[in-house]
Every structure is written in structure tokens, then in C-alpha cells.
Amino acid sequence: MSKIGFIGLGIMGRPMAGHLLDAGHELTTVKRGTLDETLASKGMQALADPKAVAEASEVIITMVPDTPDVETVLFGEGGVIEGLKPGTLVIDMSSIAPIPTQEFAKRVSEAGGEYVDAPVSGGEGGAINAALTIMVGATEEGFQRATPILEVMGKTITHIGGHGAGQTCKVANQIVVALTIEAVSEGLLFASKAGADVAKVRESLLGGLAQSKILDVHGERMIKRTFDPGFKVKLHQKDLNLALEGARTLNLSLPGTANAQQLFQACAAHDGADWDHAGMVRALESLANHEIGQD
Image (cartoon, rainbow, N blue to C red; front, top):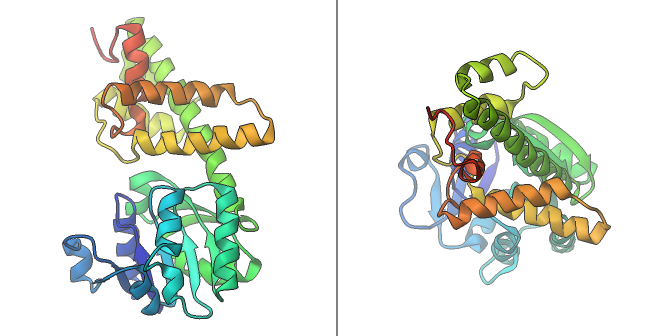
């Protein structure tokens, strides 16, 4: 069993940390208000800052919103790097930019640690059920060391390549997810406006070539109007920004991604930045002056 510092106990981080505690690992985190009662009851302890967490840990896991957040946790004042012991495994499971990830890996390696980028897909449900897809960028040694820990939280774990490759894969994932949400939104909106029973349309589509996890999970959200976040619009906006910035660097055109980003921006303009990303359908409904399921 390992002594693990887990920094970032948000919608997904909380259940992920819970699985590690259930597996017998000792966990610490950074004190941010009152520690979640469930995690505290399982033995998790809160320490003053990331430096103190690093001093108490053999493994550090970060699960925070964006690239600057990871940089602050690792290298800011009182950061992980100040308390890092030789041989410490640093696993960043956030979704951040690939190029800064490579720089973070270099700095951690120079300080004597082993860096792994391991962003995840699967949303809140995947985190709760320990069924996340985990995309790993690491050395072979780093991947081998991280795998037993990642297996506690995930179901599909793939070593994509070297440092930054996991984050590149996650950006690609977020492009596909965003465009699929848009496709499901448009299909169900068309069916509803045409007067069809949209629930039966979804049921039928799930049996054919259009079947997807997005149609299954988010299609149901759209029909039932349940937009409490499993993954927030504003976080998907952040990920598509990474995609579009990367596309400019690579001299790529990603017109579908740009359009999906505009629809998310329309959601944010209607105070929907904290909606679940399935809420993209609301932007399309506004354009159509029709809500799915409306008579």
C-alpha cells in the first residue's frame, strides 16, 4: 500500500480518492475548508499545503481544473516541488495542455521525481464506478509504477506514449465528445420538432449505427431535462480551447470543434457555464425556438 497525496477533490476527485482509500492506501490532501466527511471517515487527512502533502507521500496525484492550477500546485509557493522526495511518483490526472505538461515532466524529473500525465474520461459516473478511461503519457518505468494505482480508479488504461501524449489523447477525446453531443442534440431536436416521440426515437437509435455512450447518457439528460453537472460546460470550453490553440500551432482546421465551442459559449452567455455539457442542446433549442419534448 502507498502513501498518496491527492490534490483536487472535486466532482470526480472525491470518488477517485475514495476508491484509493477503500483499496487500503493512506491518503493526505491540502486543507480547503472542511474535509469531505466520507473521506475523513476513511482516514484521509488534510495538511497545510502541497509541500506538506509531498513530504508525507510516496505518490502525488493532482486532479485540478486547468494548466495554471497544476503549475501552482506543483511549482508555486509551498508547492509539491519544495517537499518532493527522490523517487516520488507524480501523477497528473487533470486535463491540461500537452506542451506545458512536457515542461512539468522535465522539472519534476530534474528534482528526482517520476512524472506521469494520466487524464481521464468517463465523467462523474465513471469516477464513482471506478470505470474511468485513463490515457497515459510517461516513460515505460513511470507507466509500470503508476498502473497498479490507476487500476483502482479506471477500467481502460492505455500507455499512449511519452510525456504529454496522454494529454494529447484527452484533447482528441474532448473533440469527439463535444461533436457527438452536438450531433445527438441536433438529431433529437429534429425528431422532437417534427412531432415524433423523442424517447422512442432515442430508444430506436440506441439499437443502430448511431448508438453511442453520449446518446445513451446525455440523450437521456436532454429528454429528462437534467443538467446538473457531471462535467461542466466551462470545463469542456477549456478543453476545446486547448484543441483550437493546438490546431493553430499545427496549422490545422477544426471547423466542427470551433462550432461546438461557439455553442458552449452561447450556453455560458445564458448563465449556463455550470450546466452539464449536455446542456449544449439548450443553445440549439434557443435557435430553433423549440425545447425537446415540447408539444
